[in-house]
Amino acid sequence: MRRWVLDTVAELAAFRWQLREEINARSGLPAVEALGTVAHDLVLVASELATNGIRHGRPPTIVELRQDGDEFLLTVADHDLGTEPRLAGERPPGEGGFGLQIARRLARDVGWYRTDSVKVIWAALGP
Image (cartoon, rainbow, N blue to C red; front, top):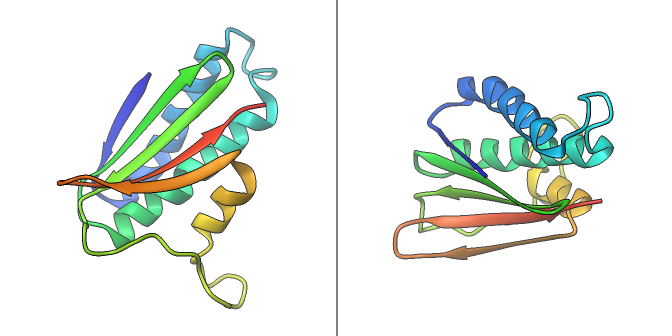
């Protein structure tokens, strides 16, 4: 459906806007009605996982969004093969580190795998 290549945190605002526009365009509905909370959740999960990839991985971070009907598959790849995604431990609010927890709460399923060149975290979302 769409692919973004991100190198810095400064690119995230434009990425979020483009992602929302892409989702709304694919829904075939006016922007106000387009996919409701699914679009919001998808943008939030994508932003959190892309931020993690940029901050904790090796650039570039590659975000791909795929669609099958009203189901979406989001993948976020980075080039740091030496680490594994992990949930944040106990932290005070505002100190960050909750991106993977947010993804697990909003997505139907979340997982990850490693290839010879990238580490990929994926999230499946839908109504």
